[in-house]
Length: 159
Image 1 (cartoon, rainbow, N blue to C red):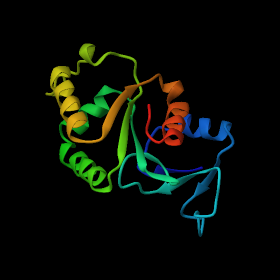
Image 2: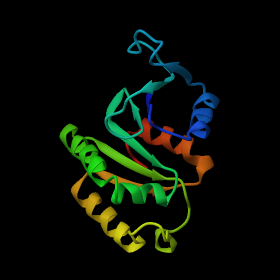
Image 3: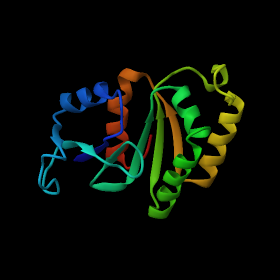
Image 4: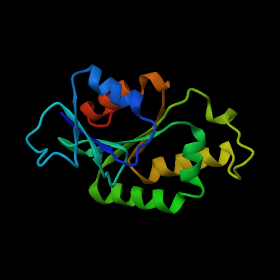
């Protein structure tokens, strides 16, 4: 298995630690000449045009990780145009994306007084995206994120 990790992915040491614990070896894309023949690795310092994680052996399955509802709210609000382009690329390649949100807090209880978007608006956006694009949303505890990402990538997008 070869997992590509987006170089813009932040605060993911808990996920990389999990990858190490199951025997995947880290490869720095900037230092490796060719990753095509490598096995059981995760590749860092590479750019993903869709999502934060993908299985290079099943290139149409993507995981987009969000650390909390506030981060997802940014994709629904101020970063909406950028994220919409990412969803368009997903549609063009016929891929499937799982948006993994690392919180067990129900969306209905989420509030952020600094943001103009509400949880009910976010839920409507999520429902619309699910209908229009081949995506699903799942929530998990932060400590389970690495195992869940790995499972999704192995199973081809089944949460």
